[in-house]
Amino acid sequence: MVEINLTRIYELVVVLYAISVLLYFIDFLLNNRKANRTAFWLLAIVWVLQTFFLLFRMIETGRFPILTIFEGIYFYAWVLITLSLLINRFLRVDFLVFFTNVIGFFVMALHTFVPMRDYSTVQGERLVSELLIFHITMAILSYGAFSISFVFSSLYVLQYHLLKKKKWGKRLIRLGDLSRLDHLSYLLNVVALPLLLLSLLLGIMWAYMKLDQFHWYDVKVLGSFLVLIVYSVYLYVRISRGQQGKSMAFWNMASFLILLINFFLFGSLSNFHFWNS
Image (cartoon, rainbow, N blue to C red; front, top):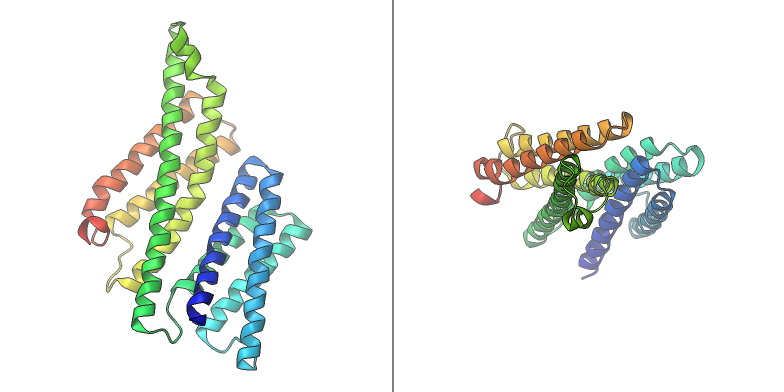
């Protein structure tokens, strides 16, 4: 019972860690200091919980808990979070902090969901199943955000067309301001991209644990990384070049088309996704 309760807390830590990574990403792209502060305090809570469990393990074993693979992974995750907090506090290198926490999240998820300890077969299967649930949930949340972003881009294109053709009327007013539609579409992609990235990391972990054979060249895997790349390019062009407007709306709509192809077509051709499960 104690082991199960600890597992629940470990899973809570993973959720808090994921939210922290998401907020750091938002701060990096939008220079949102409120998101940065919230991410910092969430990461601090994660660090406190991890430190507590590290000390608990030290008292339980009577030694420094680093002698097994499981203990080593946990300590590595703790070191990454500690460094992240120090970097955020003293150096303010947000780009480095974000990617450090992506690695830290992966390691913490590995520690939480991979059954390396003396779990029973039932417990091990339950943990792997919960890892799959986390993977699917994050993927669907990201797909939802990408979908709404696509809708905003479509409304932008429609509004742009109406303005260009000078078709004034109530429909034009109800569609809203072009800059607002463009900005909302961009914000949703900012939220969706890190969710997709974290989902892919968890999905790869699940595949290596659950499947007898996992191939990186599986069409669904390649398609998922293609979706990640096209949306990453969208954000890169948007931020580094300051490009926005109709061209970015069309890019976003094309990216969503690739997402749909990956979800429906590539998913049906995959060797291990749910259509073939």
